Image (cartoon, rainbow, N blue to C red; front, side, top):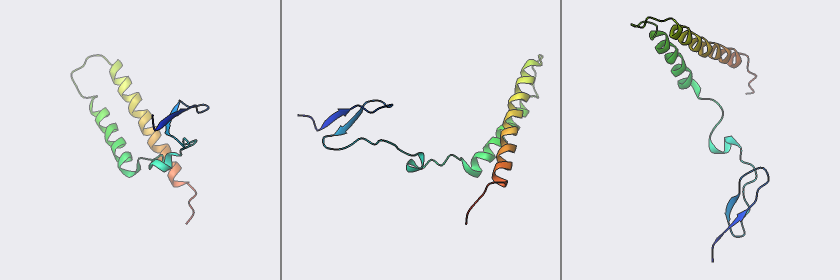
Length: 95
């Protein structure tokens, strides 16, 4: 005799729970420690990745297509970082 049972959950995959227990219907990301931000270290890492990408422009390649891709990707990362700076600066915070 098994101590678990299979339970169908609407909109989710089938759950395996202990007999007599109820499956979790909704889990918030905050319950697991994820708050949606990587913090200061993540932002520093993103700026470092922009510098690394731009350093790839110096090299022995002949074509310019890769330069355009590198510049485009670096520009997208910079735009996201600038948007994040503006978002954090204008964020409403209660204290």
